[in-house]
Image (cartoon, rainbow, N blue to C red; front, side):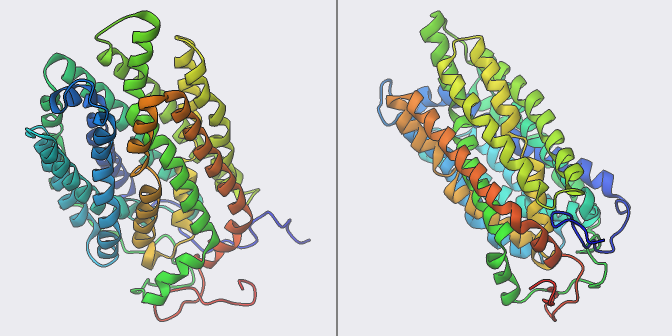
Length: 450
């Protein structure tokens, strides 16, 4: 009896469990990713104090210029990611990871030395370059250590470092800034980054495609034509565009939320000196709600995959669409209900993290997987959070209510794009899986896969 159309009719011959050393590699990459996001969000937490140091009171361009610090980081990150992603397909990824972690840690510490705005802008550019070497390489190492059927959950564990690291960035940055100075907040992240980078040099690089091999054998270097297949893969394109819209929303809102909530405290309660408190509460919400959502979303995507081939897209779309009204609730509800709206919005915003990245891994061939993640980084940040902090900062100078409506609209667009991708995921996953390959290592199309 034929299987229903929405059930995967073909599963490649894959390893039953993780490769040797998978758990220790995942633990190290998760820890590095956590410090990655700590470094990013220390800036957002300390932003109000940095602005006081760098600009005169009442400067109408201050918010927009401070937003360009996030843009500078993202521009260097997204521009260098394809270059370093291509390199990650051809050299030891652990060596590249180690060099990258050391580079961004030193550059982040140098941000604390900045005496004027241009110097701070330059240091954030170098932080982006360092992270561009890590971003494409890390998930491909994990994909080579864990089989396809478990990647949603495993990548969720890896990306769980996003809410944890972001929250710690807000908490550490806010508290150190409040009790010492904003410069000390940047200095504090340097020593652990250097240690993690050195440890990376001693990790063995797994064979590319060892968890995907099945029938297609060892992975060979890809040709230029092989890379172009990514642009012809609907799941890859729609997932990337959906992630770009989501990144616009979450990147913009996370950068400005401390300033917005501090403003609400001033307006509603007439209280001052609330930066540390706001960052701590928001950080706690992000770490709890974001962590639970990231792990639950990955688990749900893997569980539903046995019944629905497009489960990763379904989980991603449903989560972000549910989040939309709660983002608007942060604007229209008073405290303490604004915090409740924030917690629910954060939970559903992070629900897509594991599934959306599992899509990237599963529809890209191992020979170009690092480049696939790198091109994804380029697009989602070019169209997403490279632009949103200054745009929302400019809008927020006149009306934060309008800025939050723009955020909700971007989230709704992400949901629509992910729903569109549901019908394509089964075929695209099969095409990137265990098939006879071309000399470049890519699957050969057959009657069943055309």
